[in-house]
Image 1 (cartoon, helix red, strand yellow):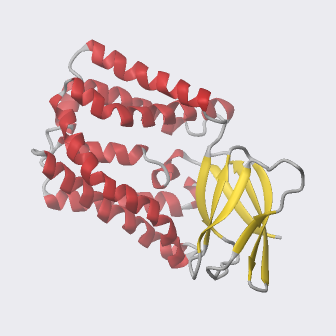
Image 2 (tube, rainbow, N blue to C red):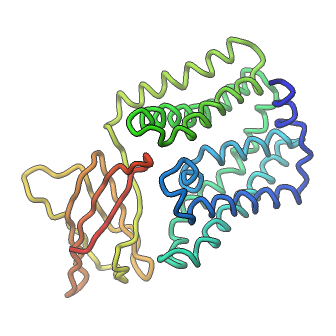
Image 3 (tube, rainbow, N blue to C red):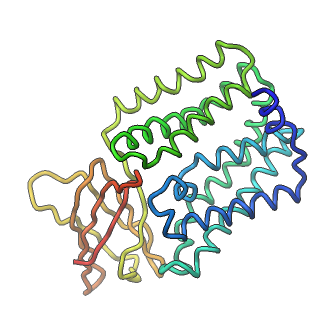
Length: 293
């Protein structure tokens, strides 16, 4: 294991051209997973949606840099090249066309954050208590993913088994590679599990916040008003609000449970009526479906 970790995290000469090739290769692979129907309900499609694969790639780059500034620059450029390229490759195959780039905003913010994160993240190579502290957020994300995916696998075997094993494997790999004693390894494994239990205890069963285009792609003005069509005295666990107006009009959906809700958008003399459905698909993804009433 030590030979593997020493080679993977410090034994690769990551020149700039290799960073670019790595970014392009991972973008093409991700786009294939998102486009080809055979990957629709598999763990591989998650590469274009969730963070676990990109944490893996980023740590490889960071750990093979000589200085923290080099780590920040190369990781930032890796994401700056790979993320928009994923969307660009998908455009000819998507019914949304260029509007698909509306979803890039989330990844653009993450790309900006990779610069300071990778600068700090380089210090995991010191293999001390500071390394474990810096690793903690990533260990928590991966623990949250592998526990949730294993739970889903037990319900819908073998769906998400690959993701569960991949995330658990990363936790073990990073603790072997970037910690120097047994107590750091034990705490690095146990504390994220305890944090996960606390989050599950204090949070509702589901906490969703996501943006979506409307199915008929209306061009809303700044005067547009959205109202939820509640049918009872109690407000449902789903709320919708206008996120952006103009040619790329989008709505923001917040939900604490699965179900459906109706809403109406009034824009001058025009009314648009929709139903939003929040559900969990067989691939373990929370899905948002908006239909015209």
